[in-house]
Length: 160
Image 1 (cartoon, helix red, strand yellow):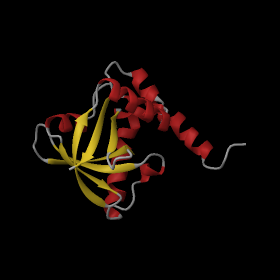
Image 2 (tube, helix red, strand yellow; image 1 turned 60 degrees about the horizontal axis):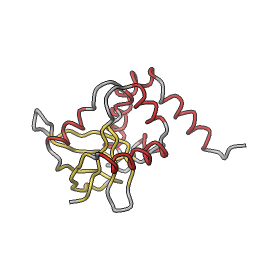
Image 3 (cartoon, one colour; image 1 turned 90 degrees about the vertical axis):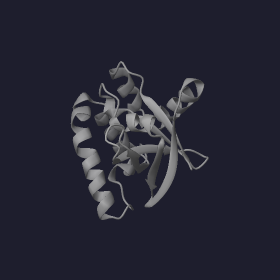
């Protein structure tokens, strides 16, 4: 028998690996996360019940305006974070990844605190290690990558 909490997580992982979820989630999950985050003054992100979550504020690549995006993240041991640009397994890169490529100075709202960060796109062996860690923590990332021709972007965010 599985411990309580394990089977719901596996069920959510199966559902989140589907194409139907990839079509619906980008419209529902971020809007819901933004609303709950705002109402709780940064204390709660619903999606963080499955994966650690934060709000990234980055400068728009084209607009130059601040863009707030709720994201799943993986905290690293050095006080930074790994961000995975999976876009729920949809073909294009998520807009926030382009924003970070053009403007790597950003801010993470982590557990209600705003933290200045600098983003760095991972490549080579460092990316491969980070990818293995991401898939170990959330297996649907592998399904997302299998569905798209692009290489999913991974960023390391370090405190400034």
